[in-house]
Image (tube, rainbow, N blue to C red; front, side, top):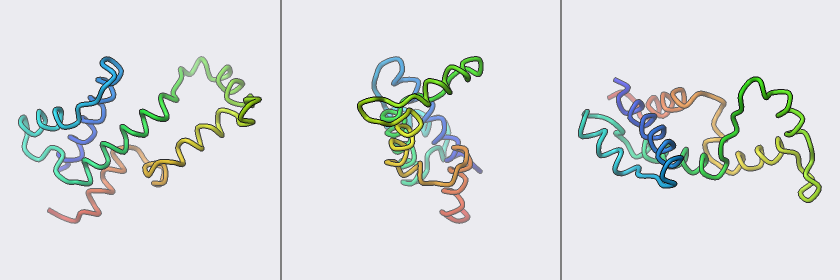
Length: 124
């Protein structure tokens, strides 16, 4: 019914918000609350692994979004090479993303990736 995928997404979002406020994660605590409120939230080991992988990637890579009205400025900034590393910001981000298992998945949305995990688990 998609409840496991929904719980996984909610846990990631809640923990990213918590990290922004309190500089910590509480995957277990939030998962426990979700599972107490609705049966089937975050059902499998793969769901938990996905949560931890996503949070690790977010922690190391940081936020890469910017407002649309800053696009021109960001294009200039991201194209400039750092004299020490001899890499521009695009290359640095690519190098960071290449370190993580989620980056090696085909480009999909989080829900699409969770759907792929669910399909791999087979019918319930």
